[in-house]
Structure formats: C-alpha cells, structure tokens
Length: 113
Length: 114
Image (cartoon, rainbow over all chains, first blue to last red):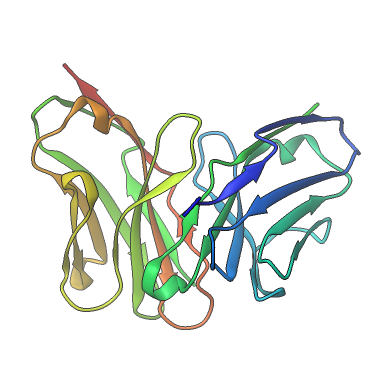
C-alpha cells in the first residue's frame, strides 16, 4: 500500500502561465478529490472524480480543471495563473468516502510570481 | 450547506496536560465529522471520524472526540499532551448524503511546551 503520491512537490510559475499537478491515488481507490490550502487557512474543495467522471465541484473558476485516468490517477490543471493561486494543493483518494474517509497526499506547493 | 468553526487559532499546553481543541459545525443534514492533523510541510492525516453510532469516537495517538448533536460540537481531546502532538489540527464536516466533499475549519495550531 503506497499511499497517495503527488508530483511535483514544489513548483514556481509566472502569472499567466499554465500548470499541471499530478496525483497517484492509493491502490484501488476510485475516488479522488483536490483541495487548495492557502497559507494559514484550511483546505478548500476544488473538485472530485469518481471512476473518471467529475461528481462534485467547489467554488472555483473554470480555469481550474481536472482529469481522472482509468488507473484512477488524476491531474489538476490551472490556466492563466494568478498570484492568489499560490497555495498548497492537496490530493485525496478513497475507496468509499462515507465508510473510510480520505487518504491525503503531502501536496504540491505552488508559488506564482 | 455545511460549515465548521474552530475556536482558537492557537492553543498552547504543557507536556502532560489535557489537550482540548474545539470544533462547532453547521449542517442541514446529519453530518459526518472528521479530525485531521497536519505536520509541517506534510499532508493531512486522519485522526478520527464520526459517521453514525457511538458518539464518543476514539482515534489514533490517544485522541478522542465526542459528537454532541444538541451543541453541534465535535471537540477533540487527549488526556496527556506529548511533544510530538505539536501540529495543526483541522476539523471537517461532510454531508451524510450526496456529495462527500469535506468542508474544513481554519485550523488550530497546537504548541506543546516542555
């Protein structure tokens, strides 16, 4: 059981650029969620995928988009980066959220300059 | 809609003292409640969760929490603090039906003094 792996761990981008963050979910976990954690704040829900379909979205603009692949790994894409996008991005996976909750990765620290 | 309020952004205790971290929630449906811990530069680790059944929930590392519906609270306690408990703690709520997204509080940073 390898847990949730996120890459890269740190990233610096320039305002206006695009970024892709990657997440390998824990083995067998078919549900993946993404959260944004700004400095000094709690994580905020971006969206969730279940078996390759988006099945929930938080209050984030369309320039935040995602994918889930057949092996249940996932990507978070952010277009037209803004300074306020600087945050820790957390991926969480689960086999059954209601029964088991979520396993979180260590996150990707994105800095937009 | 769900929301979480964590009272006290910083809590400081002495080693061996009682730890009490407060969490109040708001939910229009029966809630699922969670406590997560975050160590510096790391992700979130689940301490414990309440879904249904027994209202006193025991978690890892000696932590426990009690769901009190009448008070809409889910406070986290540990009888005796250890230096290794120093971290940030997040309370979260999700709806028992429908979307399972987690709504987090702003967190409480726990400091343990020797």
